[in-house]
Length: 450
Ligand code: C2O
Ligand code: CU
Ligand code: CU
Image (cartoon, rainbow, N blue to C red; front, side):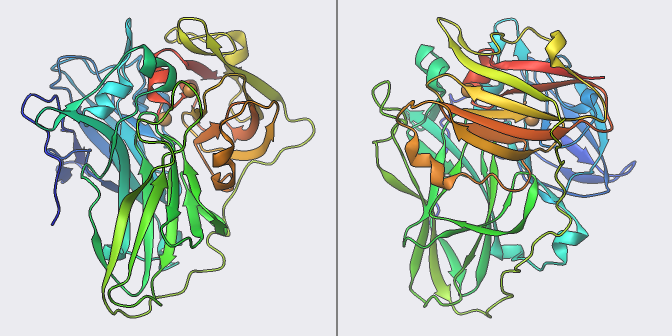
């Protein structure tokens, strides 16, 4: 009863073909032939070596999104893998347990190819495990659902199609069907016990508004940088591109035959003749759960998840760096009036190794921008509304700012402050909007750690 959406023969689907190696001879997994890219599981403390081969007709890279790795293995556009060439990268896994991901990051003279290459299949989820998390005894095995959400458009005989025009440059690419792990949403059979849903928004531009079909609150246990200190509840969860969310749901009291679905609303910004590629207000099922069997109750949700969750602290003397997000007349969006210029930084894009800073994103445009910083995890310390840009109010109650993040949604008219510390590695990293079309059209800059 699973109906895969098979791309038609003429579609350009690029399958992920890197090999991950552990130790000198031992291949951890040789991965190919999956859309999206396969799940990679790593352990904290492990050393990873990966051989990345590029059989494509254009440059690519592999970026480890959210991981604290040295700049030269971060998959940045200044270090492309040329067609027909390969590259071996190695790094230590130092991040907290959590759901991260990988995707390409090429940017040539004609703009970025992050959106197209990710769309074509070169992106996938990456999980880091550690003992602290394991000791919590969270739902695992077939009680742990790893879900990659991506909206796509099909034409003809189920051919993947990608429109990269002026409209998508402004609002980003929006598909008219949402796929879960590359498939049309299909029901999963579950038992009467707790489940963990780990969700990556791998879409180019779509923001999801995740809720339960029976109206029960959504229980959040983690974000992109790992587990929260304690669970939090929301009426729905707002998940912008590149963010991950870790949910817990208890079906212990359900009866065999019950059905529950994780759904998303296609909201409408009220701008540009509708925004989302799906009918405004439409609610669509992403993960239907059908209770088909009785099961042991399973452990209750821990009241405290991670006592060691550390975020940088600030003092009144902590410097504040402001980034103004604006729309340019013909060329997309800018950060402090600048667009991507390759591996160059301005004087105000240099930070000091070991320093803690507050970065302030001010959104003076009419589009939401999920702002991403490479190489580290940060905490969101303040979110305020500066002006009355309308149409985006239906997402506020679902924002999860607690915990650690590498990407933060800045809605139109908002000012969001994050605190970050630059540790271990000096050199160039990127910061950018993770609406892939905004990024590919120049809403991206390098910063230097010195
Ligand atoms: Cu998801 Cu610059 O990256
Ligand atoms: Cu990244
Ligand atoms: Cu943007």
